[in-house]
Length: 77
Picture 1 (spheres, helix red, strand yellow):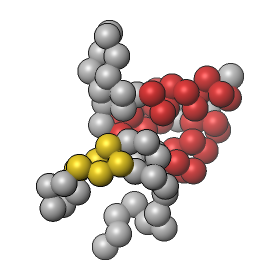
Picture 2 (cartoon, one colour):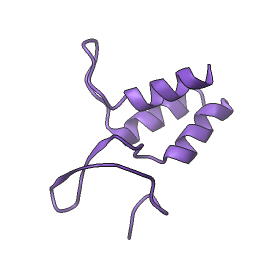
Picture 3 (cartoon, one colour):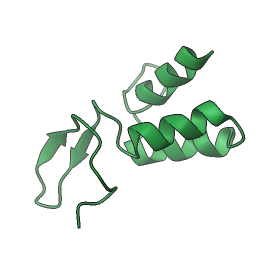
Picture 4 (cartoon, one colour):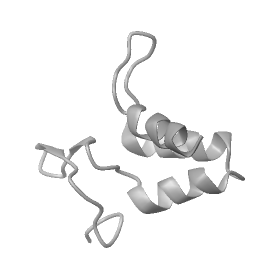
């Protein structure tokens, strides 16, 4: 079950034939809202951060980037 939750969390930002891709922050929020009492869900969001490694993000400069790891804060300001 633990691995399944991680697979679900990390697959949400990818497009599937049955649905569009979710933004990484929306994917984490959606999982947390669906099952906020599950300690595994809370741990995944805490450990991976809002933008899990492997997600594409648009930088303030407008460039696209691939998340390769979690930083010390959510925003680097």
